[in-house]
Length: 461
Image 1 (cartoon, rainbow, N blue to C red):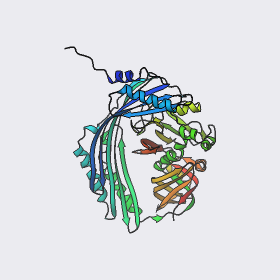
Image 2: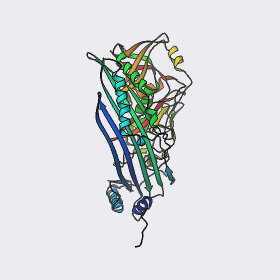
Image 3: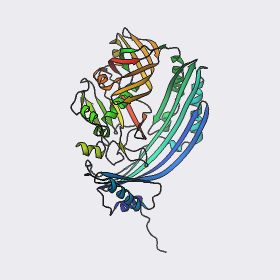
Image 4: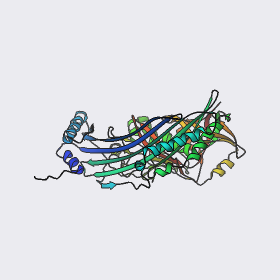
């Protein structure tokens, strides 16, 4: 009997792309294995393992895009043809994509201990211990919310320009949120751990979970925060989320291109802060949730300076936004999964280190407030508001009484101008975060040193 070679995935994808009339074509195939554990209070509410295989086709004709997702590799040519026909229906202009050199690459993560080799029973045992470590701290703990997750995602990408990429990524995370209550006074704190390379990075963190529970209880006895304008020192966690939420989204090329008012504000070369201020984004930062070699359009990631020495010098792009704005692609096109088309997204956003220590900032502040961590917030264009997880008054250059119910808010551009001291200790937030945009979410990293802001608006009693 004659034996026939089975075509490789690469050959099947290349064959599916051939022979179509379009300005640009790409196929993305994803294989995902994941584990989740979800707790409410002391009870395990959900435990599961999932494996998914799926993909999508994008086609561009005269500036119009067609998108088709699928869960089977059968009939790929027909799926490409459908995406091309969709693109023809909406294409009315010239296709303008920033040029990107084709790449052929295979990226396999180096794992110290692969979370997929750890049994579900061991993962549950670890999370059970963390939940009990929180409850053991005080009778004033009202409840806990905890979760574990791990995932390995392999993305195979091919386009009509000659790129072929196989890229795998891994992530494991654990979180415990603790709520304490005294009558109508409810306070919370959290412990979050994660790694992109080692399951053991989240093991043995019982003391940190207990400390989070103790912080929530201690906040019950803290004084209500005063309201008004203060000199404020933000810790790296709060400053990092400020850089991401308040400034990072305004630097995304699609937001700028589609908003005429924002284009008038976010003009390259415009000064937004003092010479000590530097803000950047980059998928090349090692070990962070937003770290990867190529984005979901096959563009290599890089460090992109957004503000350099107080001046706006760059923004984040997909190939399309870069082409339309006459700038270079930056590797910031990201999709939540194969069911979604890529959007312009941040990767790992951070404020660059300065030359002050935290102690120097406090000593140089006669009256102010020190804010640590955050637990929620919102931004509307340049207006922002973040809840501070913990805070302390600063009196005569020293930390004084603890505060609760503190909210940092204001105008982004005024706040950037008022940053007058930056620490020499850039710290990445463990666990990073998950950023939502356009109905999609994506893991991101956030980092910063301590920063001091003059005339910051604090909400309190």
